Each structure stands twice: as structure tokens, then as C-alpha cells.
Length: 227
Image 1 (cartoon, helix red, strand yellow):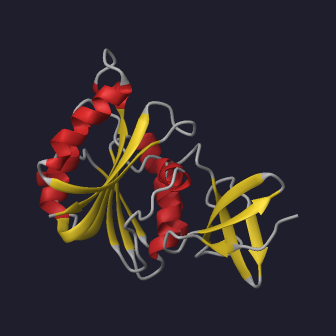
Image 2 (spheres, rainbow, N blue to C red; image 1 turned 90 degrees about the horizontal axis):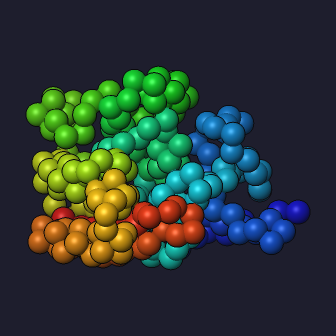
């Protein structure tokens, strides 16, 4: 039996208990439709989607205690590495119908799935592009309130900083879901995390850092603000 749904400390995120499980939720902006195979929970005339932290690094960072992920209703978001759109769909719920997401991915197969998602969720624009080629993105992306990146490439930090510099508004939030093994398999993940932190601190203000075990192996989340 699902107990009372409560507001989470994270804006427009909710949580509840089901048996011994703690569930993270967002309110569905397209009621009666599943974007993936997620469980839907109805409560007091509203519908909520269960957000799996093992499929989403953003959900992982919330469950690991991040006090603020930066997203607000109405925000414009640049999402780099949107893949098939799982986490993107929950960001879509958080920013709401007045918000908008530029969803960038380089893989045609993932983009096909994302396009189908966008038929349902009108606040997402799918863009097949290389996140490293910002000269091309400049023709299609506006200034944004939030940059979110989940790109498993060796040069993921450089890509993140380049896009943050170009597209993020002053005082905006920048979130980097970092995969250590994609940067250097010869180093321990904690060493990679430390080196990346030192690099980010030169250009951004880091407001939160979380390692994402046990939900995501060898990953961490940096939540930053533009100086």
C-alpha cells in the first residue's frame, strides 16, 4: 500500500514509501501516459511517475542527498547526452509545460526513441548533434538556465565547460554527471573525481558533489553555478 506522497526538498520532486522501499517521484505532465515502463501512482487527483535511480544519475544524486539540483519550473535547459530520454522525461516534468529542453545526442538510434518521446512531451526539442561541436549548436540553441551533461567520453569535462561558457546564463546551474572510467581507466575513480573538481573550480562555483554508488558505479555528480 502506497503511503502519503510528500514534497521532497528538491523543487517539484516528491517522495513516498511503498513497503520498505523509498520511492522518488515527479508529477506527470501528461497524465495516463507512461513515457517508459515506469510505475504510475494516483493520489488526490494527481498522477506521479516513479523515478528509478538505477536508470538516472540525476535521481541518484537526489537520493544521495543533493540539496539543490538547480532546475525550476519554467527553466530553459540544455541537456547534453539525452540518450533515449529517460532522465530527460523527468526533467520535463520538473520544468513543466512553461519550461523547455534542448535535448542533444549524437546517436541516431537513441535519437529515434527520443523523437517518439517528444511527440508526447512538447517541452522537449530533440537535436541530433555532437555536443562538442558548439558552432553547430549555436544555430539551434538559445541561452539557458541550466546545462545538464551526461556524456561518457574521454573529453567530457572540456565539452561541459565549453557549453557552459557559451550557453549558460550568468548565475545559471551546470550539472555534470561524470563517468570516471571514460576519462581514464588506469586511475581510481576517486582520483579522477578529485582532478576534475580542481579543473571545474577554476571556472565554476561548485555548490554540491555526490558520488553515486550504489546506484551508479564509478560515477559522481558535480552541481555548479556560473560565476
